[in-house]
Image 1 (cartoon, rainbow, N blue to C red):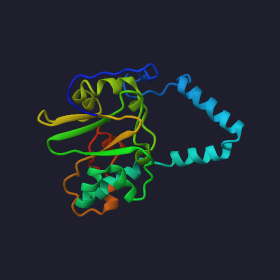
Image 2: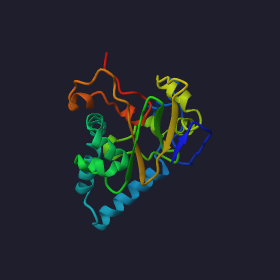
Image 3: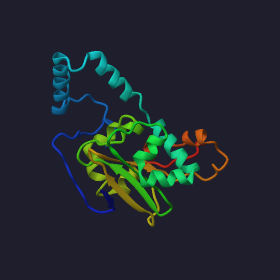
Image 4: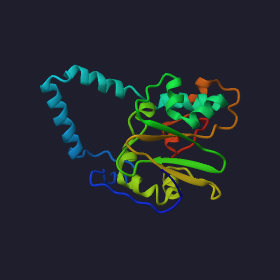
Length: 222
């Protein structure tokens, strides 16, 4: 559910914690021991192979398919929304259906697109763990899964965005959207000025993963 800028906190025992050696709360490079859920995944996977439900090759192909997804897919959806008002309306009404319209496999999840405007800026988080629109954006960044981001962005979103290098005017409302296991969000960033003559492909190149999470803007490279 979306949150306007207000206090909210939710921690879970299986969250990832810790600071990186550089001190940045959203960068963590050191190795971590396997979590309970990672050990559970390994056990279940090995059991399914042993029972003949799946072969190891089938699982590898499924993993390769998931790993091949990237933010470039989401960027194509954003670029289409920027250039096609009717598609943009369909995307905002039903993100899953509009994405399937472009040939992207969304699966059973409900995808909700939220649009940045001159007065509203949207940010995505999952306060429980790391629910994320992987079908369109690929794997989530490490910082998205860390408690430092998950707990703080719903309490002090303006301060967290500033740490990412994004300072918004005080009259811009920040809305934080909390993802769930069956409901994910994608931010449609504001289209940069001066891009009226660019092709849809060129526009997609301006859309970064972070801008579709809401911690950055879509910008023209200098």
